[in-house]
Amino acid sequence: MAESTSSGIPEVQADAITNDSAARVQTVTGDRLPPPIIRVERSRCVGCGADPPDLICKQCKEDVLFCKKCARRAKHPHPLKAFRAKDDRIVQLRKHLTLSYYEHIVSCENEICMESCEGSRYTRIHFKMCQKRPRQLSDMITNGKVQFNAIGSTHCNTCGLFITCMFIHANTCQKSECNVEWCQEIRNTFDYGTKKIYVMTDEMKKKCEEVHIAEWKKVEDRKREMMIDDLLAISI
Image: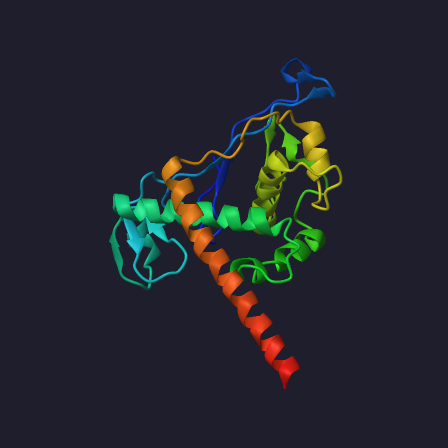
């Protein structure tokens, strides 16, 4: 189980896979490993990992969650309120949205795009330069599991999230030559078939789609405004 964090990066849980030859799946293109199944972690206390937490911060943009015991120790500077079922749904939605944004970012080539994409594309440069991330896909398959968040005792949460979304991207990518790092290698290593590896409830899927529709509408509005500005500049 991954450790809880207040970094704002959603934690993910991947079902174990093994490196044993007996676990490999025979396909028309050779032996491949069963793919990991990716789930967003449940809401937990950032101190001890208690599930569910008792309290949530009223002010922090990131989801700061505590059990009562850890809240007393933490002496958080902002007021806390009771963690309700509604809060849990909001926290889960934020995590799913973050994953969906990063899945888009890993492969986006749009000049004009969602603000969430344009503001976070630096993560692609970060991934190329980060010294804490695994250097190759095989580095992540250790002790029978795909380690998304850590290699040894040091890890980079940003790269862990980025790599997770590379797996999600590869699950649906149909390009014979994809520019996303590791995409082809992931597809060659794991037997995706028609299986969806990212687990999301219908409720979360619907809410994410609603948010994305609204964001893409903003993109179209921006494009329209830019086109009008260009036409006005020409007429002047």
